[in-house]
Every structure is written in structure tokens, then in C-alpha cells.
Image (cartoon, rainbow, N blue to C red; front, side, top):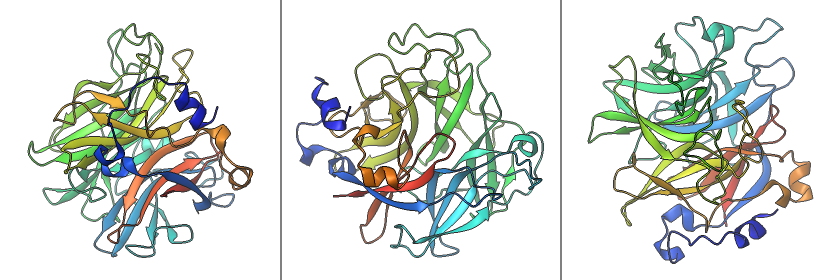
Length: 373
């Protein structure tokens, strides 16, 4: 089903009456640029399997954008060193962020590789950003902080550095772990963190993807679907304090009714609205498997209240961007297909904008982008 047919069959009213009242970047029309932003590395390289899950921040030290990305294989049978948490790439300049304008610079340096990251490596690295200045890393008590995922039953770890280039010192205990109580919404995994420094509270607001181990009776259409949960954390604390689900699958007919992915938090000051770029799928998991059924789609959500840790609603007038069966032959030939993962918006000082995402066969994705029409 392509996007037009999908939306035509959805009778839910849009959140905003007209495009002039929508948050700024939601009001744009986005189209795929089929030219690859970052390809997989050659055989034997640390990122020869997957290049994806981008997180991009401005780095004053090098006067360019620094991208952290999920690079696999995680454990290399050929004897390459372990203890990796991310791959890194730099843009050519503040405004040159398109295909051919990024340079890979290797894995992020880890100051203290230890078990279990030596055994399994980390992935889905996210730099804590200032909530009111997108793509700007927050410096908290003189340090930058990043979150990432480790483990078969996924846990979220934290790391800090004096420079975005690293080295990153990893806190040796997770700050978020799967719940241990029967029925916990995150009983299987705490996954895909994004995190934002809330200056008014002096705390970091974390969104994470929570996978249940048992069926959730509050998610009638997707009892095993992942939801988005928030937690609050101070870097001086050994663990984050879990709060509540902010977006729950299985309760409506939205494009992410099957499962919900990670948030990129955005603020439209003109409208006084918090909104987010996120992933999800209309297809619910059949059991407690850690895999998300395809297709993974990108789209928008809007917070119903004044605080971004409140209830969120999926936008259905501008989302999703694309369904996989709507890809053109040229786009498929370029390597896109099956899924569109972990969308991330970057706007340059001159106003150029791209939404970065990874696509392709599961376990073999590469980085692509959307451009505003």
C-alpha cells in the first residue's frame, strides 16, 4: 500500500486544520534523495554490515557537523578490536550535508572498554542535546554525555567526554534496564534512547523504546508492541527514574499502531508546540520477539500538553513520509527498501534541511536522506 492509499483509508482528523498552523518542519513536503549519504564499509571494516541510526550535532572544535552512527558488525570474527560504541563522520562544512559531503573518521574512542561492551559492543549512540537548540550538544558541568544500547536484553548505558571527538568514558553500570515485575512495559528491552537537556529542570529527559515480555492488555491492537517511555536523569545519578508511557501502540489506526520508535524532540516556538520526528509501524509483533515487524516508517507526532513528558499523538495528515511499496525502481536500485529507520532532522545555518535515515534489507542498511520539496 502506498502512502496516498494508506492515508485515504484513515478517517482520523488531522491535528492541525491547515498547513500554516502546523509546526514548521511538519508543514514541508519531503521526498527521497536516492543518493547514498553513507554506504556500508568494505568487507572486514567495522561498519561493513550496517550504517544507520544517525545522531548529528555541531562540533565547534572542527567547525562541522559530527554524525554518530550505528555501525555493525558488533562482534567481529576476524579479530578486530571490540569495545566500540559508534561510528563517526564529519560534514564538509556547516552547509554541505548532502551525498558526497560526509567523511567517515572511524569508531568513537572509548577510554575504558570493559565487559559487557568488549563482548558485545554498543550501538544506537545518542548525544544529549539541548532541548531548545536542535542538534546542539548540551555541555553539563563541563562534559558532553551520550547514551547507547548494550546487551541481548537491551540496557541503556551512559558515557561522557570533554570533547565530542572523545575519548568517551563509559559509566560501567546501565542507567536503564528492563523491568523485573510481571507485566512491565519494558520487561524485555530498554532500547533506542534519545535524550534532551531540560535547562529549567536541570535534568535530562530520556525517551526510550520499551519492549514488553508479556502481552499488555492496555494495547489491544498490539499487545507485544513497543511503546515510547520517558525517564528523568541527572548525570550525577547512578540510574534514571522511569516515568510513564507517552505513546502507546494498539489503541488507534495510526501509521505507528503496531509499534513505536525513538523520538527526536523539536520545539515550534511560534505555536508553543512540542513535536517530534519518530519511527513506527502499522504491523504489530506477534509475540515478545525483540524484532520489529516491517515496515519501519518515518513520521511526526505532537505533544498534547505543555510539557514534553506528557501524552503524544501521532500525526496522520503529514505522516508517514513513504511506504516501502511506493519506492520507485530507481530508488530500489539505489539500495532502498523494506524499512526506513531512525529519522533525524538536520537544518543548516543557511536553512538547508535534510532528514537522515537508514534503509535496505534488515542487517544490511545504508544511510539515505529526505529533502524538503
